[in-house]
Length: 419
Image (cartoon, rainbow, N blue to C red; front, side, top):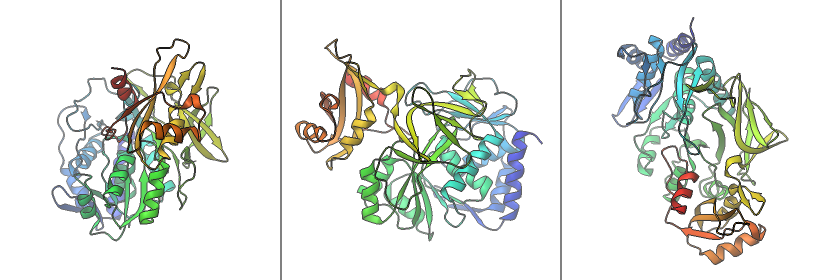
């Protein structure tokens, strides 16, 4: 049995066992499918003559397209709506899936995966998070992104976790999506959790709340818990290797740098530069078409500065983001966490900008969405940071727009600030 056939046989067996149970609800068209009906729809899905299938959109059509790729033995490359089919050769033999990286710190790249690696990622996520068939996933994050694909699409098809697809993350739509269920699992990004919290729109049916894609501010996690009793669980992963760590405690964290415990089957360590190394069965095969020593043979070398203490992963920023101020280096995340502790700061982003003083190398700049002014924030930071880590340049904005993956691009804001 080839690699992709293994996935389809797992789906076929699971669909037969759960044939009469609820599987998928697409709110955009109002249709619901049992597992038997979803299997039949996947069997009827036709493919064209191309050797690569590109599931797109936030609808049942994405699932049907993916199933058609598995059934016909073609490579799947999920894309966001409007993205073009990548002009690359088929990945190495045994690789049946291509992911696109998030492109928040560099240009987007393709990643090649085997069926076994995809299945391992889904199994690790289901086990670590405790995903349950009686708590359907409420799908608002893109199915084409690594987060949505591994947390929503694969648990549906390989583990029988039902999926409710919402056409929009607006609070009223999310409440309507959850209305017919007694309990749901809601996986989102921090920007969405903040919007729902501020609008009073977190559904009462949420039993498991997950946040990934960007660092979860401690103040937001604590505020949601205080208001609704819902604990948002921080999830840390990467497109290259899937899930890495998950924070499962029932109470809010007290340290924003704490990402959680490594997922079952995932082994983490720190290299000589202080960056996290990830090993496990879900690590991707390679970048494609250009390979890199950072990824392959079951290992992914991240550029995330980290500590591993007592089994917990603590993130200390990214190696490439370090700001050099007169020979002293600081991670922007250190300053951002201190700023977010101020009750008037909604969002912030810190980065290094060229300094007019050649002796300083960089100066620290901050873009902030806050009702408090520069002097108040400077004084606040001096209570927890040394003076040289307090930003010299400030830009105040209404909000920091996140990309489609829920991430705020530090590189884009830095370029805009310098320009």
